[in-house]
Image (cartoon, rainbow, N blue to C red; front, top):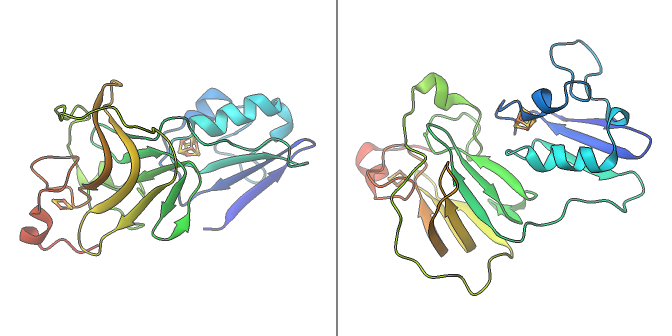
Length: 210
Ligand code: SF4
Ligand code: FES
């Protein structure tokens, strides 16, 4: 799917349907700006202020929505704290200056952790149909405060294996608890690890194919 672009007087909104996980924050928060179930034009940037549009983009967990001002003065800024939020029965939601599989990927992305996405490493919502169950409240791991909490985060999907992440990253539960702080980690994306969200090598035993 190509990226849809909606140009307003002050803002340009881009929508990447391949990234969208249908969490529906956009259509529930501003159904006048993102109008669901219509044919033709469905994104109306001029119905919100630039600040409201930036907030809508910021609340889109997958990075499907991206906003800039037409004159280039308003752009999304990197988070002060890099995080990966573990979603109940769903993907891993990253917020960080992301490089995924060698490509700059913006500041937000939801990556598959059930193994069923047809658009790996990104989540495509297949976890629901696959009946994936996984807690959003993993047990805390002993860790110390990071010397720096932001900066570039590299995510390397290992072939037939986990996501190798390098950079400053805090692991957050669905209820907002920080349960680990890492500068390097391997996160399960086969869906079968016994110590999710981390890889425990199970992908080899089950013959996971990415
Ligand atoms: S992932 Fe983003 S674009 Fe997709 S429904 Fe949620 S907020 Fe809207
Ligand atoms: S990727 Fe799931 S156990 Fe390694």
